[in-house]
Length: 483
View: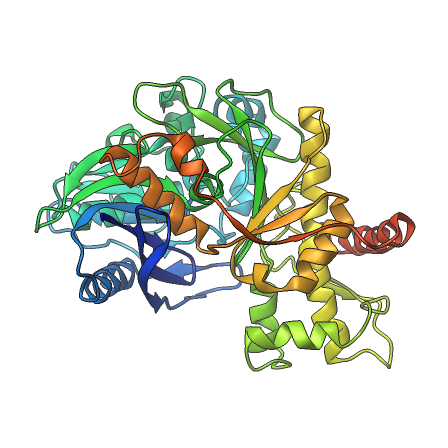
């Protein structure tokens, strides 16, 4: 029996997760990461802390295993930028996290100057501070990071791979490269035109290697055999290998991805086109994506910011204590709005409060907001691809909430299936690494391992569903263009 380990370096923590040949969890270890907020709208991580968490969780997990490890796969928070010295391996600045909005003004100026069509066509993205390019440019212009032959500018996958291989390999994969705003997703290479536009030298960027394939080895000889962005990993882990299949991950944010096959589609308003994965020797698989910046983050804010719950686990019982939010709508635009609005100047809004509003109404509104934001994305997605969604597979921390998934099914009018293994991000990275090392023989074999533990079907009347969604959309309009 072989074991594959996934390192899942997310926004709030790092998890090492072991998977056996049957796709069953075989152990895990976790460390939380410190969130740094040096200014309003700025979000940073300590790269040294990320690496220390990787070392700790990997060592702790391996100490529990009595089976050889066949491979390690790395999945990561995307768009987050790390700068380090290739000779010393030392970080040159805190990592700038995907949620960070410090470059919003530059993105607006670039759009005003007419650069959006180039960015949209080449990368499938929009001009937004969410992506890596303006973060890298900020580090070079204002962050005290100097260009030179020793400079490495990478996403978190590249940082971890560099450290795991003792500085031997500086690489990324198409799924992560496609999130930088510097990678031409149609030609499968860094775009020199975009690098020049943003002022990021190509020489500072990682080599782009296949998503699944041996990249190097650890100091004790374990192959490191996959790199993949976290949301693409979840799509793979959910078994969505056929065009038209879709998943949503309810994490710090929510990310709806639909497999659209091996032909890069034209841009769809409000959505991103991204590389899902690039396997060696075959055409890359593309996905349409709706990126929602704050879902689980809203629950954390109810705990940390308002103190109305002691733990995220409290949100379900509190929200279920009432039948609906009683007119209260909560738009958690703490860092602007992502898909399908792409408004970095939106801000969080709570509307519809009355003297009778309290903890249950806010909790319920936070849960409902997750479902409403997902509906907004799916409506844009199905309109863009020209055919309806038939099922949504879901995972992530908030997917434990039966109430959320029932509201989601009601809003989408399709079945919502919850994965039996909730850690589908880690699962996808493990599957991709195992494919490279022969643990699994094909993507079809991997897809056949997927199981659900519950499926939710629509129950609420269409008129009620649409009325509640219309109230949400009114609240969204009040949050937009605020800053």
